[in-house]
Length: 241
Image (cartoon, rainbow, N blue to C red; front, side, top):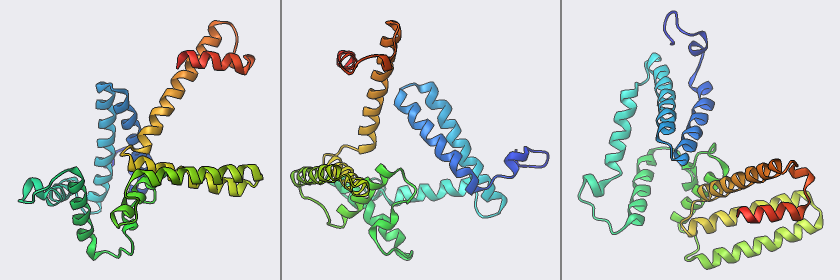
């Protein structure tokens, strides 16, 4: 595709230009996995593999590394970070495995210019995932509630501040306090071992399913949501719940 007589579009691509397609394909793979349809997963996994192979191919053309080199590197990393599997390290539980993983990772990056434990969190992650990872890193450094109670209290505190900002009519302050509230909720999810991305994804899925049901119900009755009263809408919504 990138060789002589290949596709002009493929030939002009760079690793930088391919990042948007890689991200898109990864999200499509996630959707396929959550659908529970193996055929969709098969197709989307193939698309992700293609993106990986394509990008690796560009670096091979530049004589920098090959896909085999990438596979070998990650293989060595997995062996190195699983001393409880490939070595003689003994662990008590999954939490200890995660702590060991982080220690090994930080040791590997010891030769890099890392000023903070937060430096290892990619800036381009979806914001909920990035917030979760930042909180994880901070917790590993000792900046954390020891139990979930204070975390819930922090949510209550941020909710009160958000309500105050909302009533003030100050949009900048309201936005700031909403961010603080969401961040506090993400932290409570982390403390409860519930990933916010998955939690919100589930809620979004429920909302979409119910809203589509509401649209269908209205259409079956020869009307539309816009023509229904709020009481009528809520009645149908609660029936679907």
